[in-house]
Image (cartoon, rainbow, N blue to C red; front, side, top):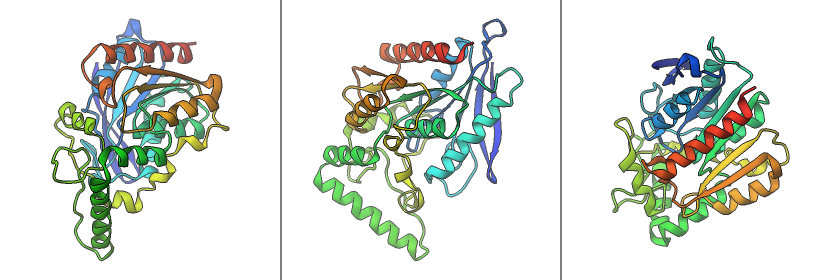
Length: 300
């Protein structure tokens, strides 16, 4: 059963869907999912939520405020503190469900939200398991990967565009959106690798290829850095990386796994940053692995 849902986050309404398992299959555990940078839940997450529900989990998938079906302004504005607050309220919503054990909650994040879920597990010791797919582990290294993939000229053009928009916003001007994925080739894109064009191909109807420029001014991106937490983490984690990923740093993911030791299982898939969101055998394998991981960590 799929039920539309709403929960309040600050003064805004976030919307999502709750995927509930068949009664006989229900195991009492829950999983919360949300997308990465600029993503909406209709960009490939419904299939993951359904797979988790089919395996017996209550799966809650939602849009951040200002994105997709959720309320909130400014639109297309990424703020790490605000998105973490949205996550915490989504977790609270699922914990309050009568058929879910509040002590058996897992998190699923991808790319930018792969960093969120690790930070959330660090701050909430009741989170029992984390799956982070193609996760942003070190924003500095990933920015360097993006600059290399984008090339010098386009990277300089992107920086110029960000600075120009920042000046405009500083003096109260109207926000001019930045392109997230390199679809309009004449414009610099925030995601520098050509593989990011797949974002538009798999996107649902609510996704917009736009990022509010204030994201770089007020979004506190530097706070989404799980590489700083390795000595303090206690939650079991599964990292699923694409071996050909040129959007985030796989070196950072491998280093993170080494430093966390037995807490982290890292699996490499023969694909890029968006392969595991597409309808293929690798996505099915990633789903199956995540389900087995959640069953091992969340089922009593």
